[in-house]
Length: 132
View 1: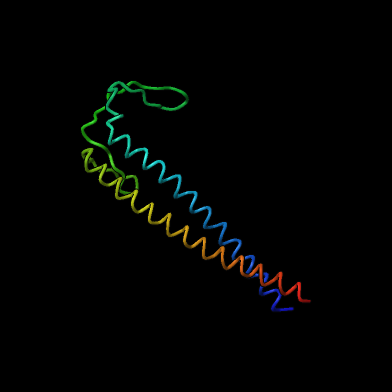
View 2: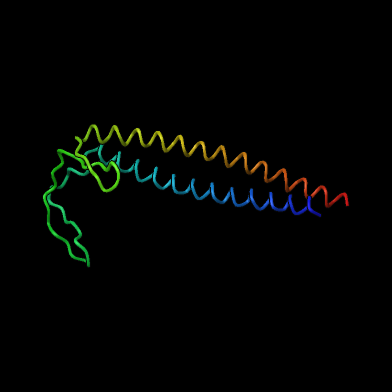
Protein backbone atom coordinates (compact mmCIF):
# COMPACT_ATOMS: atom_id res chain seq x y z
CA UNK A 1 0.00 0.00 0.00
CA UNK A 2 2.83 2.41 0.90
CA UNK A 3 4.61 1.51 -2.35
CA UNK A 4 1.48 2.35 -4.32
CA UNK A 5 1.22 5.75 -2.60
CA UNK A 6 4.91 6.37 -3.27
CA UNK A 7 4.46 5.58 -6.97
CA UNK A 8 1.42 7.85 -7.18
CA UNK A 9 3.38 10.62 -5.44
CA UNK A 10 6.20 10.17 -7.97
CA UNK A 11 3.69 10.31 -10.80
CA UNK A 12 2.17 13.54 -9.44
CA UNK A 13 5.64 15.03 -8.93
CA UNK A 14 6.66 14.24 -12.51
CA UNK A 15 3.39 15.65 -13.85
CA UNK A 16 3.94 18.90 -11.93
CA UNK A 17 7.54 19.05 -13.09
CA UNK A 18 6.45 18.70 -16.73
CA UNK A 19 3.93 21.53 -16.26
CA UNK A 20 6.60 23.70 -14.65
CA UNK A 21 9.04 23.05 -17.49
CA UNK A 22 6.31 23.78 -20.06
CA UNK A 23 5.67 27.13 -18.37
CA UNK A 24 9.36 28.00 -18.45
CA UNK A 25 9.58 26.95 -22.11
CA UNK A 26 6.64 29.22 -22.94
CA UNK A 27 8.21 32.20 -21.16
CA UNK A 28 11.55 31.68 -22.90
CA UNK A 29 9.84 31.26 -26.29
CA UNK A 30 7.98 34.57 -25.86
CA UNK A 31 11.14 36.34 -24.70
CA UNK A 32 13.08 34.84 -27.60
CA UNK A 33 10.46 36.03 -30.08
CA UNK A 34 10.47 39.57 -28.66
CA UNK A 35 14.27 39.72 -28.56
CA UNK A 36 14.53 38.44 -32.14
CA UNK A 37 12.01 41.02 -33.33
CA UNK A 38 13.95 43.79 -31.58
CA UNK A 39 17.23 42.59 -33.12
CA UNK A 40 15.59 42.55 -36.55
CA UNK A 41 14.30 46.07 -36.00
CA UNK A 42 17.79 47.29 -35.10
CA UNK A 43 19.43 45.41 -37.97
CA UNK A 44 17.05 46.78 -40.59
CA UNK A 45 17.02 50.30 -39.14
CA UNK A 46 13.21 50.12 -39.03
CA UNK A 47 13.08 52.40 -36.03
CA UNK A 48 14.84 55.20 -37.97
CA UNK A 49 12.16 55.59 -40.66
CA UNK A 50 10.29 58.26 -38.73
CA UNK A 51 11.91 60.68 -36.36
CA UNK A 52 8.52 62.14 -35.32
CA UNK A 53 6.93 59.74 -32.86
CA UNK A 54 4.11 59.74 -30.35
CA UNK A 55 4.80 58.56 -26.82
CA UNK A 56 2.04 57.44 -24.47
CA UNK A 57 1.95 59.50 -21.31
CA UNK A 58 -0.97 57.55 -19.86
CA UNK A 59 -4.78 57.69 -19.85
CA UNK A 60 -4.85 57.52 -23.63
CA UNK A 61 -2.81 60.74 -23.99
CA UNK A 62 0.24 61.01 -26.22
CA UNK A 63 3.05 63.53 -26.56
CA UNK A 64 5.02 64.19 -29.73
CA UNK A 65 8.72 63.46 -29.43
CA UNK A 66 11.76 63.50 -31.64
CA UNK A 67 13.60 60.21 -31.90
CA UNK A 68 17.37 60.27 -31.51
CA UNK A 69 18.57 57.07 -33.14
CA UNK A 70 22.28 57.52 -32.50
CA UNK A 71 22.21 55.79 -29.14
CA UNK A 72 20.07 53.05 -27.59
CA UNK A 73 19.27 52.84 -23.87
CA UNK A 74 20.07 49.34 -22.63
CA UNK A 75 18.82 48.05 -19.25
CA UNK A 76 21.50 46.70 -16.94
CA UNK A 77 19.23 45.95 -13.97
CA UNK A 78 17.44 47.68 -11.09
CA UNK A 79 15.98 50.35 -13.41
CA UNK A 80 19.49 51.37 -14.46
CA UNK A 81 20.18 52.00 -18.15
CA UNK A 82 23.33 52.73 -20.11
CA UNK A 83 23.67 54.29 -23.54
CA UNK A 84 25.12 52.15 -26.31
CA UNK A 85 25.43 52.68 -30.00
CA UNK A 86 23.23 50.58 -32.27
CA UNK A 87 25.96 48.06 -33.18
CA UNK A 88 26.83 47.34 -29.54
CA UNK A 89 23.17 47.04 -28.57
CA UNK A 90 22.59 44.65 -31.47
CA UNK A 91 25.61 42.58 -30.43
CA UNK A 92 24.17 42.31 -26.91
CA UNK A 93 20.79 41.24 -28.30
CA UNK A 94 22.41 38.54 -30.44
CA UNK A 95 24.25 37.22 -27.38
CA UNK A 96 20.94 37.20 -25.47
CA UNK A 97 19.29 35.32 -28.35
CA UNK A 98 22.04 32.68 -28.23
CA UNK A 99 21.63 32.29 -24.46
CA UNK A 100 17.85 32.07 -24.79
CA UNK A 101 18.18 29.42 -27.51
CA UNK A 102 20.57 27.43 -25.32
CA UNK A 103 18.16 27.65 -22.38
CA UNK A 104 15.21 26.71 -24.59
CA UNK A 105 17.01 23.64 -25.96
CA UNK A 106 18.13 22.61 -22.48
CA UNK A 107 14.55 22.81 -21.20
CA UNK A 108 13.30 20.77 -24.15
CA UNK A 109 15.86 18.07 -23.30
CA UNK A 110 14.85 18.16 -19.61
CA UNK A 111 11.20 17.89 -20.54
CA UNK A 112 11.88 14.89 -22.79
CA UNK A 113 13.73 13.10 -19.97
CA UNK A 114 11.02 13.84 -17.42
CA UNK A 115 8.30 12.88 -19.91
CA UNK A 116 10.09 9.57 -20.59
CA UNK A 117 10.25 8.88 -16.84
CA UNK A 118 6.56 9.78 -16.49
CA UNK A 119 5.59 7.54 -19.41
CA UNK A 120 7.68 4.65 -18.05
CA UNK A 121 6.03 4.99 -14.64
CA UNK A 122 2.54 5.07 -16.18
CA UNK A 123 3.43 1.98 -18.22
CA UNK A 124 4.72 0.18 -15.10
CA UNK A 125 1.53 1.06 -13.21
CA UNK A 126 -0.64 -0.19 -16.05
CA UNK A 127 1.33 -3.44 -16.26
CA UNK A 128 1.13 -3.94 -12.49
CA UNK A 129 -2.63 -3.42 -12.54
CA UNK A 130 -3.01 -5.72 -15.53
CA UNK A 131 -1.13 -8.56 -13.84
CA UNK A 132 -3.23 -8.33 -10.67
